[in-house]
Every structure is written in structure tokens, then in C-alpha cells.
Amino acid sequence: MFKDKVCEICGDPAKNYLYGTFLCDREECIEKAKMLRGGPGGHKLIRVALGSENPTKIKGTQMALEKVMKNILIVPVDVDSGVSKQPFGVDEIVKGAINRAKGAFEKVPSHYGIGIEAGVVEIGGKYLDIHICAIFDGEEYTIGTSQGFQIPEEILEEVRRGEECSKAVEKVYGIKDIGKREGIIGYLTKDLVSRVDLCRDAVLMAIVPRLRS
Image (tube, rainbow, N blue to C red; front, side, top):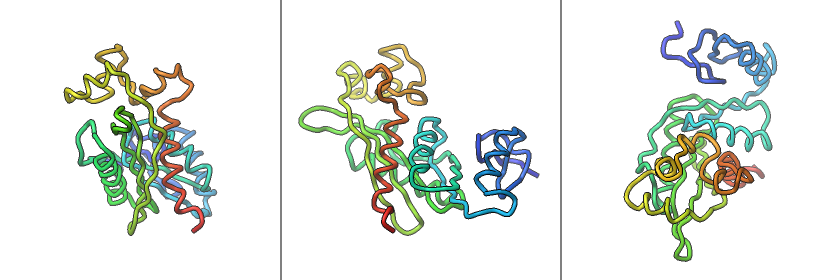
């Protein structure tokens, strides 16, 4: 009955369908779905399709949306960004974010599709890492960016050779899967700033044009 369906809270295989949501059998997931729905009677639930299953993007998006919306359900979706694994320049990063947002929106019935793409931009002769978010509502999209930080030269050398930033960090610093955890910014700042913070801020900035409406 639930073949190929996953829990819309944690992403594990679905075993139940409750409160309008596919769920696993974990009590915490069932309780969260109940809370988001507002109980069996249900209140208005805002469903957001996120074009990534990366834990840092999920957490950052959740933190951003909870500041401005109620009853949110984020559904992570694995979609293709349609750009290189290591985007260069604002245009390519924006394209990746939009592709993720639209791809997620088309895969999952939702109010919004959100895409977050990280990449490298040149500013003042230096190379910075930034995150760009696109929010798509089926008709138009809005864009926001995170703070940017300068990439260390030893990492930049690997990136220039075509290496993905997270893979370059693994190669140079010996840290695996950093993009799914604190990010290179967490390593450089000794956890004063994390990748979750950058994702959160990019999503918040993309929401700005929608706040008054």
C-alpha cells in the first residue's frame, strides 16, 4: 500500500497515512504530524517542498519558516539542480536554486517549492562561498542570499581543478561529508557560524518580498 512512499517528517519508509501525511511508525513523527495538522479536525497546513534531502538545508529551512509561518510541513525531495556539482557565478547558482524549487514543487503537492544552491562568486578579486535560495509558488519565484565568506586558497585551488567544495575539504582537511553537517564555514569559524545559519538566512531573505502580501 505504501510502496515507494516515505515518511514526510523524517524520510524513512512510510507505514501509515495519518493527518493527511505519509508517516513511519515513530511516535514522534506521528505527534509532529498531528501538531502540524492541528489535530484530527485539521487547520490550514502550509506544505513546503524542499528540493534537497540534505539535513542542513532541511533544518535551515525549518528555522526560517517557523519565524514567519504556522503549521508548516517540509517535505524533502531529491531533485536535480540542473547545474554543475560546483556552481560558479551568480547566474549558475541562481539557476540551480530555481531548478530545485520548481522541481520540488512539481513532485510534491505543496504551497511552495524551495531550492537552496551553494556556489562560488568572485567579488573584488576574491572568491566567496554563498548560498542562494529560490521560493516558487507555481507562478513566480523570489530570491534571497546568505552571507558570503572568502574561501581558503588551498580549497580554492582544488575547486579550480573541478573538485566540489565539500570534496575539496575532505581531501585537504580530512573532514568527510562536511556539507551535510557544519559546512566549511563551521570549520573556519570554530562553529561560530554553521551552514545551517547560511541556509536559514538565504531562505529568510527569499521570503522578504512575500511578507507584506
